[in-house]
Amino acid sequence: MASTVEELTVEYVENGVTTVKQLGKEVLSKGAWATVIFKYQDWVPSQNEYSEVKFTIRRYRKVDGIYKQQSKFNISSVDQAKKIIEVLTGWLV
Image (cartoon, rainbow, N blue to C red; front, side, top):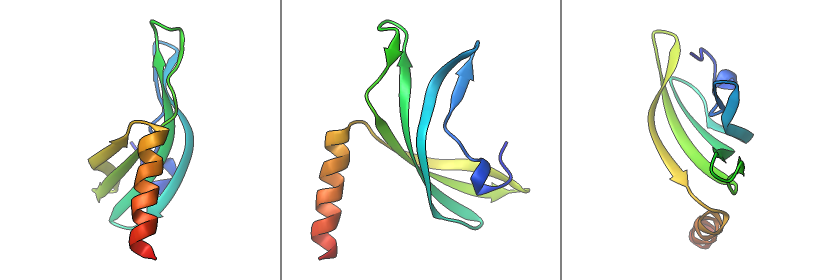
């Protein structure tokens, strides 16, 4: 359980295997509600290797001193991430 934004992670280890490997993290907002974007890879047992890079944006709410995930949006590929960047860049010009 994370009591600070800095402690939040998507990395997950099961039976000694890192099934979700966190590659990067950026805090987009802090406070009672926090928004964090993570760069990660999933372990693919059938291929004995990690997946392509993925991204997830997560919203957390601090309740009783602990951050609890409230929602998430998974960006499943680099191509999808580039398309989101393209659209947002166009809107912000």
